[in-house]
Length: 306
Image (cartoon, rainbow, N blue to C red; front, top):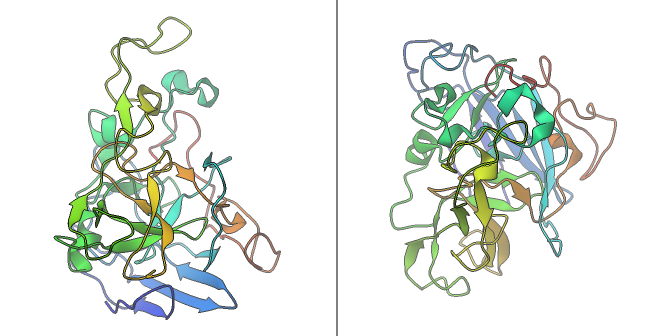
């Protein structure tokens, strides 16, 4: 795998595949180009590393090659306040072309409107996730829900360094948890940055209002943001200087605790990240084009794991 410094350059991965666990997958293909202020990522979403067995316990879906195109600004602008993704939206994309898609389609009582969304990392069986905290959507898209361990290994690991692993839908870079202790000083020590979320205390509402039971992380609503509790803001990011952005940028971090992969956007997500979004050539935020899928956008409330 050839890895070039970003935001400039071209990344091409094709015909490179590590042995998958107990299955044979199509060869991965991802092309990242930068032109006229827009970064375009074309991918078949096949990982360049081993995966778990799919279908398998907790996830009935088989991995299949997709035909996806994502676009985002090279120089994104931060908004005053972060916002949650609206509608079914892929949060971001890894350098190997595998989507970051932290939310699931599992809801208490199979009702998407009740707000009790089951979290993969808090679920008892992790909904069939493999060693890279990934599983498969109903139409076959392999995607990460948390730290993509084998991708990080393929990129040389992040021990003692800041590691770029992808981009969010708004164009801001995504790093693992590591960052400089002083975000403005690239010579300061590397530390594992902490999320500012904590589990709520007490019991969830019961009856018709909620699933009841102790707040334990099974649902995303079990967590609450406490400003200043950790190193990162509500979107799990901060403004900092990095090797790829020596003049500074807003950057997201993937943490070992909730939200794992961020669930909010500091900038404006491009329309190409909407599942079932505009087709190529139809236009949209960040330039022409959009996202193409080989099937439906993925399980509804209570449907197969997403």
